[in-house]
Image 1 (cartoon, rainbow, N blue to C red):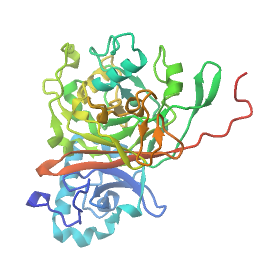
Image 2 (cartoon, rainbow, N blue to C red):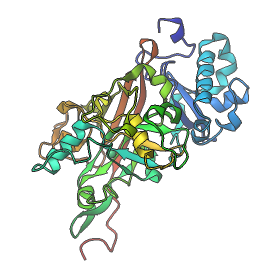
Image 3 (spheres, rainbow, N blue to C red):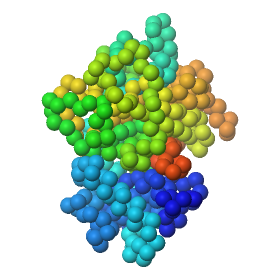
Length: 412
Ligand code: MN
């Protein structure tokens, strides 16, 4: 930290994902106590409920003494800005340190919880390189992209109730993996994605424009959309993914506010053909956000979000174009993020080319698909204000073995 705006009295280690230019929100508890809203800085968590209790922050009707961010998010962009500015000021004034001491906890001493109560979960399919790779693998005879792909952001409605926080175990799911075959998936995969969290909902019958994203979206999480490829490929036609995806979706414990990502905004790729008017954004933006995927600690991919074809604003516009409403807590994920290079692919299916070219890890073992005991961790980094680099920490999950065969399972 070199300039005045970047200095804080909280110790922030070099290379921390949480400098004062970030201030991501999460939900935590200490020693089995009540869950409440916190903000990460360096290797500490600031208890916002405690600060509101002493009058240092606006109380917002108890919005910080809650087991999710939803009540705070529902207050809207003006309240988000007031709290963020006030908090940054407090963290820059050395004379505040004594009064705030009891509201600050070491990050490694708290339990991080699912930060949002997920209302609806939507997953898109918006990376051109990912969609192209999947098309080449699954439909080698035909065109890589489905007919609608360049005309609208393809997506599906997922299962909100099985969104879990980083660190939650992921049990290998059972399902129909082929005709007449019910068993544990043999093709378990990860998908590295970026999720936008809706803070302010909308009314049914009132579509939201692409340019209105910042009036509705509170912040951004990292997403791992775990996928069972054998279950998925047997079930997905014609209505799309169902049980091959719905067993678990992991998100990061930290929600980086949109405001912290201003310096990361970039112009998205040119769209050909130009989208219809309802998908037009006069000032379109995406994020210069690089994901980093580790498998058992080893970096296997660095997918770039900036080249994603459809923008977060267009996701919002498309989702509401038919009059569907938004709710506080809606999670809008990008779909697997892949870049053009082999080292930028966001799923194991692409990295190992549908099992035909398994990855070789540093310990000499190979992976066509995930094994029991494997840990997948996805980190994310973006430029922050004042030349800083901000991050999410990570979203991580370990594969637990499938449950034992039920007595009635197997072929009839
Ligand atoms: Mn996905």
